[in-house]
Length: 91
Image 1 (cartoon, rainbow, N blue to C red):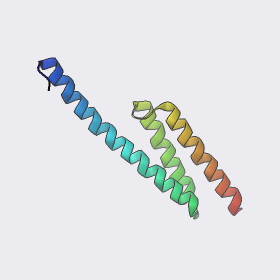
Image 2 (cartoon, rainbow, N blue to C red):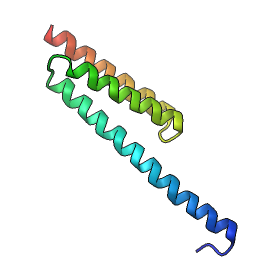
Image 3 (cartoon, rainbow, N blue to C red):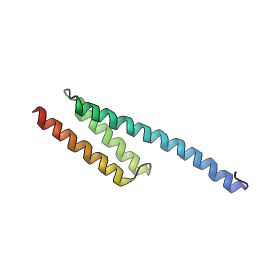
Image 4 (cartoon, helix red, strand yellow):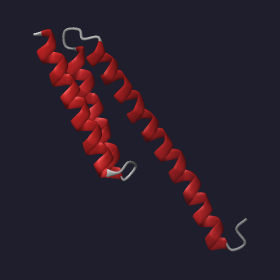
């Protein structure tokens, strides 16, 4: 329990940041799942759009510091690799 005004403020800031980060992380996870689903069951232009949206969200989260930059790079690499593999398999 915070006993000083500065500690109380830090606690309020921590709570606000946690909520904001949780929201961003949830959105990133959702877009990654949608992109993986689009890769697994490819349709016309859905796969490219879903992968692009996921990559954009991961980049934005990494730039805000919500996720680690190496996690973002790894996720983007895996998505691109899976998308390319899916594209060559169907072609």
